[in-house]
Structures are given as structure tokens and as C-alpha cells.
Image 1 (cartoon, rainbow, N blue to C red):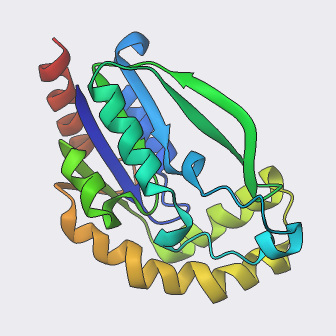
Image 2: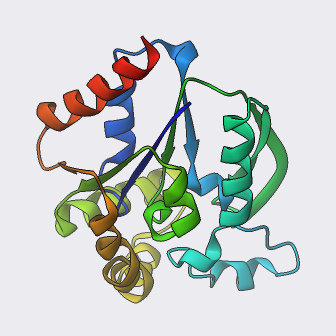
Length: 202
């Protein structure tokens, strides 16, 4: 199994890059795991308390479960991936049955900050995008998909997203094998990743 870690700041275009990589690969051989599914369960907190959690800090992520799940997939086992609700700020009772594939792509803003996780990645990719561009994308997504208002998104950006990006996410770029500038469609970097994958699954 080839495991690819794909990181980058919020709104950097990680999902777009995942689609570009998968575009020409057989569906049955490639799977995707999102770090967002692995936010810690916070059942003991009220909704208002959960809303105050700093979701851009590594301690918000259940890295232990993510690492165990990747190891299980590598051993040929099927896992029950958690499902997270951004509207409730909590894990739901649902899970998604995820089967091992020849290639697993793990994507998320903080995945390169965890040493144990980095050890499991065969290729580490970082998607870089301009900070203004990332903020615009984040605004659009949170308002349309996550029921936030513009003041809430901007406040969170200033108080947590930006400082956490500078403290944790940007420095994790140093661990990347490939950096994809996502200001425009970067065919060379995408083709390099695809070539490595094709070599592994052919």
C-alpha cells in the first residue's frame, strides 16, 4: 500500500489537488481519508463550549486513532472511519466502512505536524496558496456549507486560523517531499505524484 500525506492551509485547494491526482486513476485502487473525520469526540461539552474549541490546533485531532486506522488498512483490514459534523462541532454516531486500497491519500491541514503519521507516509505533499486566496475560499465554504456568518468566520480566522497556520501548518511544509503551488493549475507537480502512484499500482 502506498500512503500519500497531502497537507496545506485551510482553503489552499487540497481537495482540488486530490481530485486532480485521482482523475486518471482507477476508483477501485485509490481511497481518501480526511483528517477532518478525526476531530476528537467532545460529548462531555455543551454546544457553546464546543464552538470555542480551537480546531486548528493539533490537540483537536485524534491522531492516535488515525495512526491506528492507517496501520490497520496497511495490514489489509477494513476500518470504520468516524463521521464529524461541523454544524454540531462533534462526532456523529455514524461511521464509514473504509476498505484497504493500493493507494490511500490522507489529506488535512495538520497531518504533517504529527511525527508518527509522517512515518507512515510514503510521499508527503504540501499544497501552497496565497493567504488572501485561502481566506476567500474559507469564507465561501464556511458560509455556504457550514452555516457560519461572515463575522464568525473572520473572527475565527484572525484569532485562531491565522496564528495556528503560522505556528503549526506553515512550518510543517519543511517535511514535504513535493510542494504544489496552487495559485494556478500545476500540471508538473500533479504529474510527478501521478507517475509515482502509477508505478506502484501497475
